Length: 327
Image (cartoon, rainbow, N blue to C red; front, top):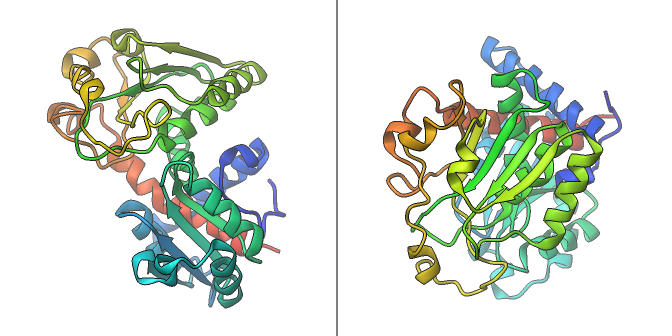
């Protein structure tokens, strides 16, 4: 177990070693057990974290707020539209000041080609750990909860066939950060990962190169397909989720010709039948019901989305316990 994690930023899981991630998982499972038993966990008594949100949130905001309260601390929710950020204050000034007021700083900024750079600037200047609550490229809070859920439900990790599949949605032009994080993380745990999407919804080239290296280094596999049925076939875990065409098209339009040409990319019972008999359906939520997935699938016996969502609480608490507490 890694014990020297106090002060470590949580901007991407690529910057955490496998030993450090394993520690996160171990602490997450311990916190989940204590939560179920009603055992107090006041590991961050009197500690304060500031949560900056440029976008809306349900799971991320509430897992952080409730999580820090359960750890004995306090989270300040900050809608950035009500901050001086909205008048042009730079990340350096915000990071230095908020970092001097408490013990942790977290931020969600998903603006394409802005979000991750903003997080990096906060981390450069704040003297407290900075946590990524989702940016344009990464969502490590979701990634660690997804990994925890897979381990919890499937026990073994190695050689699980996990398919990350693009799905049709019209709610908004979603970031690529969830599938990107999964694409990089899962091969590090020896999983056989398939990334499936229609042409036009590519990940950045550096992501694919890194995913292949992560697979080679950990006895996993990584492949890309543009055939969704191939991705479902014999899969142990399927994660059909929409992401926007940000790599090839930076326009903010939600619905365009490319999107409408791929309305058939939908998780249905027929496609689930192609997978392993014990296949599990995952989604970071909120799902675009009726577009990304049929209700009978997300509400059906193969769905583990609510366990996945609950684990956001336990993993968020583990991150804060380790990087805001510790020695």
